[in-house]
Image 1 (cartoon, rainbow, N blue to C red):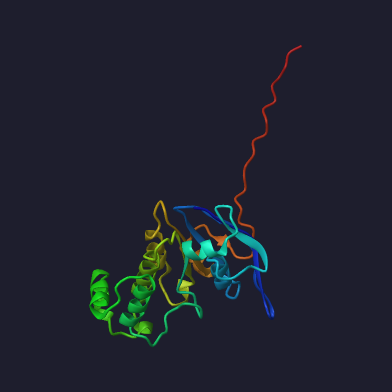
Image 2: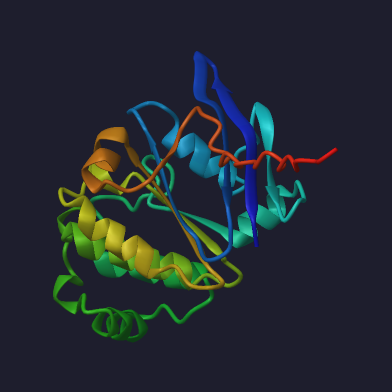
Length: 221
């Protein structure tokens, strides 16, 4: 499965939210996308997941412009002010709601068992805002990856709450498989700390193709 964002831009009521951005995400790839604060991280995440129609450009899934298919195949994870869990909810409540959404058993015992399986039972009654950052990131990625049909995860700005970027980077990369790709959106300063190649918000990130000049064969008279 390949996602191709072609000159995707988003304009809000008071101006641009996302400058035209071009990038490709292939099956089994990890893609880091960086931009300055306010450059449109969440807008790109919403567009890639078929939840926001771009003002310019398009998002193609295997060559098809089909937002419904994107919504089925792409999960937006922990987007601020969009689908991040409420800070005051207990972790067990957040997990129960997520399990119910994906058609899993979500009763008290099912949630307790899930938390034990994922090493999070000690925090079951903690407010979500007090769950350790690495555990928060790991659990939300696991829940998103468990959604039926999802083949791409878009992790939105984990550096806003995570002081150690290497940790969330490792968690995001661990979700990559031959069938699943992962996109992580972060700030440019975080990308520099990670020293990892990153696509840029508001830019054409199409890889340059090197062309070789044809060899000139010498002829003899």
